[in-house]
Image (cartoon, rainbow over all chains, first blue to last red):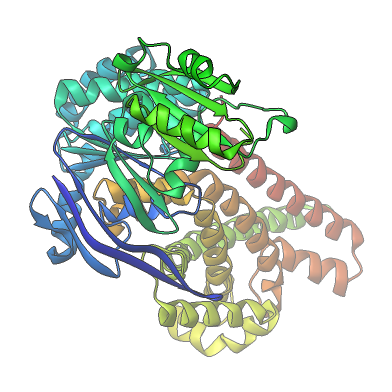
Length: 337
Length: 220
C-alpha cells in the first residue's frame, strides 16, 4: 500500500544542515494500523508528511498504491491527496465554520455539489457519533469532539489511507481511549490503512498491528507490535518499551540496581511459577522491582523487572535458567523507572 | 454667526469627508487586499514563497508609508490630474488618499492573514486544496474578523488623512477646521468640526467592531 525506499530529508537552516530523515525504507500493508513511534525531534512528523508529500523528500521514493508521488504533477498530487486523509494533534479545524461545513470542506475542494456533500457529512457525523453537533462551531466542542470532527472530515472523501499525526497527544487518557477505539473501528469496518505517529507506547500497544521505531531520523526497528514489545532490539526501542508506559512509574531512587533484567511472559509461559522455582533452586533472593500485565494487541503480556543478586556468577546462571524457559529476557542497565 | 450658511457648510463638509473617506477606503481595499495577500503568500513561510516578489512589494509599501501624507499629496498632483482631470477638490484628494492607504491596508491585511494557524493551512493542503482555494476559503475566511478590525482602523486613519485635503482645496470637515479655526481664529467652528470628526470616527469604530464581533465564530 505504502512503500518508502531510502527516503531522506535534509533541511538547510541558519545553523547548518539538519538531516530529519536518513535512508528510511518501510512497507505498510493494506489494512494495517501502523504505528511510528519516537522521541520528539526524532523525525516522525517529517516521515508522516512524506507519505502525502506535504514534505517532499530530498532523496528516495514514496510509492502510494503503486504511484510514485515524486512523478506526479502538482494537480495529480492534489488529487492523490484526496485519497489520503490526515488528522492532527491540534485538530486544525476551520474555526469560523461550523461542524457540517468543516466536514464538507474537502468535498467542496473535490467539487462535490452542496446537497450531496451535506448528505455525506450527515453520514459521517453518524459514524463519529456527533449528529447533535452538526451546527456547532469548533469553539463549542471539547478536544475529543474536535478530533471526531477532524476524523469525519478526513474520511469525507473515502480515503484509502488515514494519517494520524500525534492525534491523541492533546487529549486526556479517557478521550484518547475513545478516539483510538474509533480509529480501530474505522480500520475494521472500512478497511482503511491507518498510520499513527505518536510518542506514547500506550497508543501503539492499544491499537497498532505493526510498529516502526524512529530515532535521530533513522528507522531503527520495525515489525509486529508483539515482537517489538517482547524483544526490543535497538536502544531506542528498549527505552520506549521500558519508560514509556503511558502511565508514569515513579521508582524510589534507592531501587536503582545495576543487575537488572526485564522479562516478558507470553500467555503460555505464565503457567509455571518460574521466578519462585528459580529462587528455590539457587537459594538466593531476587528483588522484584516491577511487575505488570499489559494488553498488547489483545493478548495479555506479563512484564517483570528483577534485580538479580550482586554475585555476577549467580546472576549469569539465573539468566541462563530464565532463557531456558523460553522467556524473553534482556539486561537492563541503570533502571530508574 | 451660526447662520444658515455656516450650518450648510458644515453639513456639506460632513458629506465631503464621508465621500472621501469611504471611497478611498473602498479603493484602498481594492488594491490593498491583493497586496496584503501577495505579501503573505510570497513571504518565506507563505504558501508560495517568492523572495523577489516579496522584497519588491515590501520595499514599495515601506517607501510609500514613509512619505508624509502632506508631501505625497503634493508630489502626486500631476498623477492626480492625469487620473481625475483636476488637482483640487474632494475627488482629486481621493487619488493620494488611495495611494497612501493601499500599502497601509496591505500591511494590515498581511498581519491579519499571519494570524491564521499554519496547521489549518496544512490541513487544507492535505485535502488536496490548491493555493487559490487556500487563499479564498481558508486564509480570508479564517482571518475575516481580524481583517474587519483592520478596516475599522483604516477608516479612522484615512478620515484623519482626509483632513489634510484642505491644503489642495479638498473640502471636508478638516478643511473647515483649518480654514476657520486656524486661519480665522474662529475657535467655535473649529471645535464643532473637530467634535464632528470625533463622532464620525466613533461611529465607524462602533459599527466595525459590532460587525466583526457578530461574524466571529470563535466566541461561545
